[in-house]
Length: 120
Image (tube, rainbow, N blue to C red; front, side, top):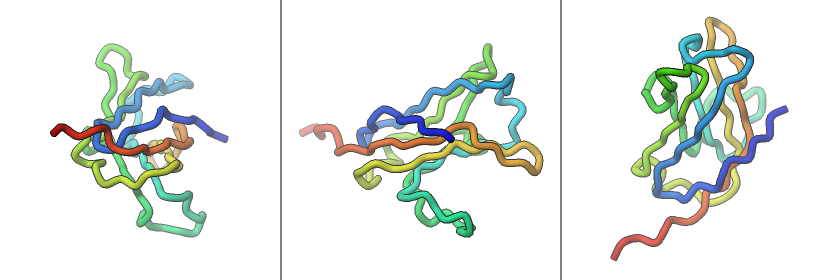
């Protein structure tokens, strides 16, 4: 079971999550990676993602790996994409696709807190 608590995220600022793959995995081994923040954990019979708060993917180049160490990576969601995120504590999951198999890389919760003071 995964239960990684990410640092609080201030809505309206760049969201960045740094990670390190284990078990000799490298970023080049994955067909796709998706990092998803959800309003709630969906039931196992739900086939859509209508409750997504935010998402980043390898195919959209929002998940990148270090050139020198392919096990180190970064998830990045720009501030422009999270200005309307709801406030609260939300579950997130980080999934990898290799061939026809889906693996959970990590999962946990993140608290989205109010915007930083806006410029005048």
